[in-house]
Amino acid sequence: MLDIQHLSKSYGQFLALRDVSFQARDGEVFGLLGPNGAGKTTLLRILATLLRPTSGTVTVGGLDTERHAEGVRRLIGVVNGGMGLPARLTGREILRSFAELYGLSREQAEARITELDARLELGRTLDTRAGEYSTGMKQKVVIARAVIHDPAVLVLDEAASGLDIFARRTLLDFVAQTRAPGRLTLYSTHVMSEAEEVCDRVAILHEGQLIVLGSIPEILARTGERSLERAFFELVRSVDARGGAARAV
Picture 1 (cartoon, rainbow, N blue to C red):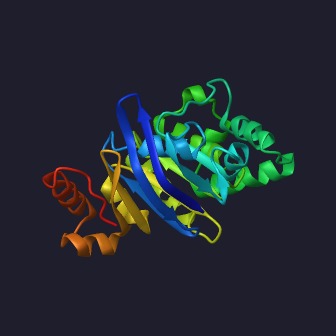
Picture 2: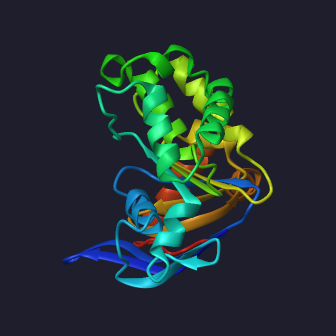
């Protein structure tokens, strides 16, 4: 579903991504982990065709993000922590408009909205104007908008940022439900407990480089730690002690 090969991205003299390579399979929730500034968002923006790589390739569902950008956009849904909504529209109006953009009929759109209402507990957000939303209400509609067309690949970039405990729980439960054949969910976060709960495998980035890739049990066994957060700190310290981010896959 996702194949990244020798991906690098520079901004002038700053190298945000350095020769990153990994694959993510269909049927899994794949975690992209690292502190702020690790390169996670840059990588996801390249995947979403919003940035061009300096070198390397990214293919999504067999489509190259540079040569087949329009096809990639139809395959994916993207959520991040800073997306806005038109304040004067209700949640239902927002979802209907995006369903129309993706070519869904009115009947298909209403069926999909009903399904997402049940899965995301949209409730009164559907008939309330977005300008009156709490942060949690807003993020639920942002997620529903991203998946209204039932994308094969869902990209969640710090999607739980700013959510209260109830909205966060709804999000994590929703992510767990996305695991299915022919589907891939990329879950980017710096909160290790979230990844530990929902991810099948994770890639950890540090200073733009991939330092480890594997399942959470494999990473815990490798480091001898009992939590992903402690394992993360151990891996980063080990890399820094060697004076550079040597890849450990």
